[in-house]
Image (cartoon, rainbow, N blue to C red; front, side):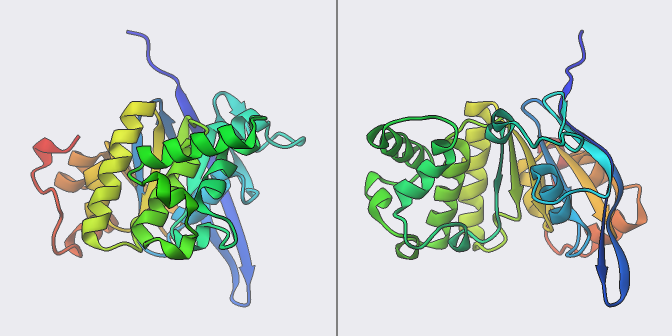
Length: 266
């Protein structure tokens, strides 16, 4: 059997920040891969470096060392900037759904932004596609005529997902996208993402501080601590047989893991 090549390869990635207290190694020599159709979770406490990795992979921050390769192209060595096609294939959803949208734009117009920069389509067709993807994400056509402040947090996050997937990306980066939502809405959003991942054959880098949430959605989990990747493996192994002391403490701090039956974890 031919081994599948990863679509994302992160090698020895480093990022330092300089402050009044000195140099902080936010990301310290981190390496990992993500494969076609896989959902990999990146978990750790606040300040562990998770969101910095997301920003580095998405090109929002330049690295101080190491490399990021996506679809066979080294992104961090390209002096001319990332090709438009790569941007289309790598999309990111952020933590605060309300802040993710311009309050002056109606939702259909904002969702259409996810495609407007990659295809020259008439405004009418862009709106049709935006509404179609909003419906795919559980919203109504009428929601397209509303402003962000007229929607709930969960509805705004659905719209943010629609904007990200309208370009049909190969990799979706989800940075703490359920942390601002209540538990019932979290479950709905996770179910939506799982469905979309299968329908669109997307890979996901799912970033969270909540191992219970990651265990519901991801097949593999990577544990961050103080800028370093300390442990990685299938979710069942990390929850049932953790090797690193930090991972053990992290598990012990969780009062309730939503899927303790590790035999049923995907």
